[in-house]
Length: 148
Image (cartoon, rainbow, N blue to C red):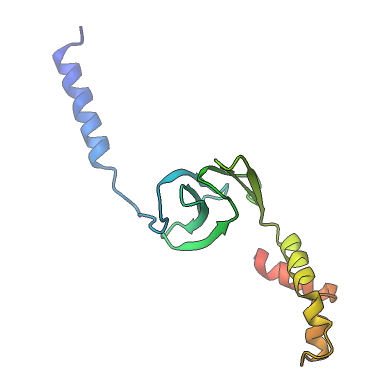
């Protein structure tokens, strides 16, 4: 049996702790239930997994940064890699998608995507614009800017 004064002290301490907790922000934007959340390793980004088949990325102010689409059914879980460069999402569609946020890889993928456009002689581009993806110095500068 717990003494009454100890019980009262514990209840008072719990009430104070609970009353001191305040909602910091509310992340609103999913179209269905949110089933999982994760903080990035640096604590600056939140990922949320939803039954609306998406993963959303948010900043700490509650602003939606990005919506990741690709699952065909409810998304149940989301996790960041220790370096924060990859997000894994798990879905009822029986898939796990690895979302790559390594800037160099994204630049390469982006350049591969626009390669035909940049090399099309019928598109009115300056020579420096055509060479944007083949200029290693420029790509290095872009990476430096985004890493600061």
